[in-house]
Image (cartoon, rainbow, N blue to C red; front, top):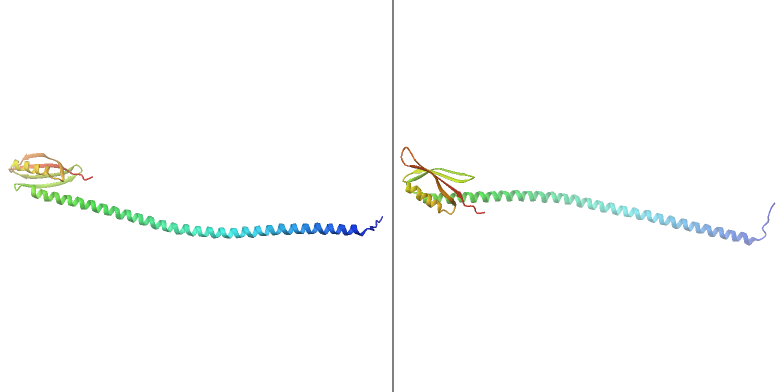
Length: 178
């Protein structure tokens, strides 16, 4: 059986509803597509920006690594030069101390005494010599006790020689400037 719709307004109303819902669906579809496209491009742009930042940071890291190596090399060179300078100063002070001691020895040593051995070790210095008389040895020992370079200066041994005269050993410690 056929039904005839004699009321055209219903058809028009159905079409209007259909067109309205179709437009609403298309609008929603367009808005959703636009939002997704915008998000896609925004994320792509952010990704490009982040790649640039990563490249910049990588380059800065490389530059800083090179500079760090240069600074470390400079610091090791400075440490080496400082150690060499410290060693040079210590050697110079040591040499000056010896020079001063030798000058004092030349003034303090009586004409009747001769030094035959001069030795330095961890305990101090050891002076060995020959000569006579005993009073000259005592005078030499007393003058060495007055030396500003030495302390605890003392005669360790005095012995008579077969050829005549005396041999003596004088021990002393360096004065430390520390």
